[in-house]
Length: 386
Length: 226
Image (cartoon, helix red, strand yellow):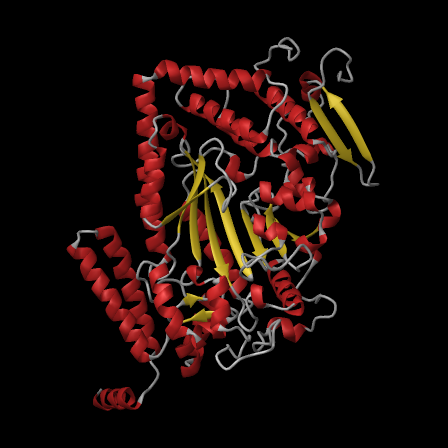
């Protein structure tokens, strides 16, 4: 890819090289990718000798940033299969809101990290904090001075928690090679919040469960997951809504179970069960309520192909139904990667940055509708429907 | 808006930022975009979407160019816990960071590593409840720290990382019990993971036990008899 090769020399090469393949987690590939959008692994780590972020002074935070920056940016990232892989480092206290929002929409940082606010309500935009992103794939990012000094995450499409964990652990070892982590023989990796101690490991899977919603079984599955001690969150994590029935399921227990035990539970026991329920619901809809399913899918596609004003939530709901239509064989000629790509590019900041201009809410709705029409157009003249 | 060709509606809008930071806008129809080799896929990598001044590339820093104002030594060697934001401490506060247990109960966050030791008795049961009864860490141990321990055989470092002999034995016992239960419950995959964990910890524990009076005399007996 020309773009990734140029990335070494010039962060803003000419536009012709600006378009490359999607971020890995948007590709719609991998195990169980009919139901699982992406898998994510997060490790929470703290550097020994410094107070945890919520208690750290500004000087401490600045030093933590420097320690991490020197370590992370000197980690060898290239190999024979990824010759152009490298980190970029972004100081979030020094960038504008749009850049921070872009990173949130891209799932590279948490909303909390973008705002600089901790769960205690303390902090603010100027708190020293950063993120390192491995480009061009963007499947690994490291938040510095979030609730913990280091929060390393890997993200991949489909059910791939094992691959995510292996890569996260490898980078974790490379970082630890240059600094002492806060570690306790009984509590394991020490974290600011005791709910993360032990492995400091969170395994999350983003699932698309539209058929369970249509059959009215979603609440049951949601409650069952919560009863099993799992957290169920929306598209953008904690506190976010789930338009389009996109849900993130993750473990909450981190102490007393090793990485392998947690991985086995999530990847081989819990998630396959939920995937099975959704597939069963899809089959049921196809056999007993096919007309309704066809109507929902075609109606959604029709609206997306012809609407002139589109809100984010509505677009996500409709794209969710189109995705269901594609995966049940009702709709043809659209691939899931296209839908995933739209789910990202219709987000407010992506929409504006792609167009290179700041838009009002109404202008965004117009631009969003136009972007979707362009992407889902079958080749018929785009003006014929207006 | 019409495309530059003047025939079709422009649906691909691109903004080129030149090296002189000049912004050039182009509006093309899909056909013209394809002809010019512009992808109609609107995905743009983050490094080109985010403002140029917002980030630095990996190569911008090397291990030899320290950041200004920060001593090399301070970066390479972890330092002692330093006073946190609030230096006012009370008798029940953590001496490392000044955090009180009341403050922890309010916000649910601890101040530093030292808090785990100072408040261990009080937070232990809370942690156990939060982790479905899990009270001892099982799994990964910091890799480099562990290697260094094995190389130096410094008892203080070994204890800091693996716990003292009693703690190690307690953890091994707990694992053995869980392994038996898994086998009894016919959870064989879980049992296999537990067995691997147990053998890993057993080998670590046996290779790292520091010489206590009892064990050193035992080893000297063995040595003399061999």
